[in-house]
Length: 245
Image 1 (cartoon, helix red, strand yellow):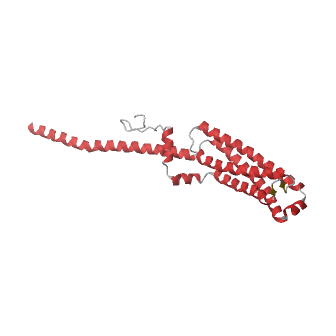
Image 2 (cartoon, rainbow, N blue to C red; image 1 turned 120 degrees about the vertical axis):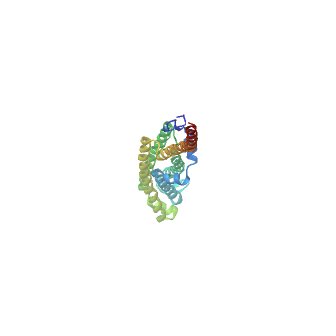
Image 3 (tube, rainbow, N blue to C red; image 1 turned 30 degrees about the vertical axis):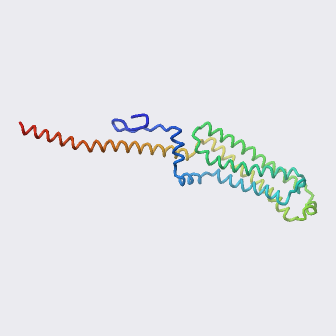
């Protein structure tokens, strides 16, 4: 058998060696529907989409009614500033991390895969801690806020109360979501490359096996095609020789 995994003289088949170029080339040629179906089972994508939604709610509620430049209804302008900054960065980072999640399973190099997964895990730990601090800070400052001030300053008492309570509540929800993301990140770091890479590997293995099997069948068909002719010629020569005797 040659180095490409083809059949030898006796027709045995050995597992072909797949290089990095083969795997990446076949990934780009894979069926888009099958690839999309595989991504539907990635829980990390759905959790990050929920985290994006919660971050929009947090900084949107603060910026809409509870905050003006130099003034925050939660007793301290730093509480509003901190909530908006953490929410906006969480939104942008989760959009980027969703794209990274979509491409993580296409990485072949195990060391590179674990470096990226570890970096994402560290960021998730940091931002989960930030969400916890945001929740505690805003809840504390809201409890210390003199309630008559926002009625006098904003003239919109009920909408402000609803927005602040929603921002504090979804900050807590965001912290909970990041706990789930952290657990999934640890599982990914321990698991290594996922099913899409395995699917691609066996897809390449199956394709090379089919090509090798097809090549062997062509050779066998040519052999079977010529064998009866040779047999008939040998039989005719043998008959002629017997007649001469």
